[in-house]
Length: 130
Image (tube, rainbow, N blue to C red; front, side):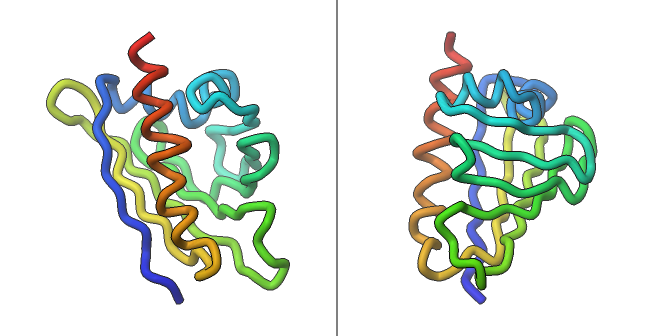
């Protein structure tokens, strides 16, 4: 098993708004600049980045928590789904997302670790400045 990916990032937006960006297809697509189909419902499927990422919501606590079975399209069929846990909370001047991503295959661990800031956190900060 690979080491968990653990990241925390703050934004000038409320936890509720950050949750909506992640779970609303239009907002998710606008914030990342790539087509996404996402859901705020437990059991709801999702795809992001034109299908490069996919999975389903395992647990959702509105405005507070999302737990997903998550995988990238280039992973091997023998690779198990990873588990993504996102926690949304208040932070000075806005909200914070704490990410724990476990079970990412070794061959993509570095890519996923670097991908969160590159494809999510940095573009989200730009999106929120609009």
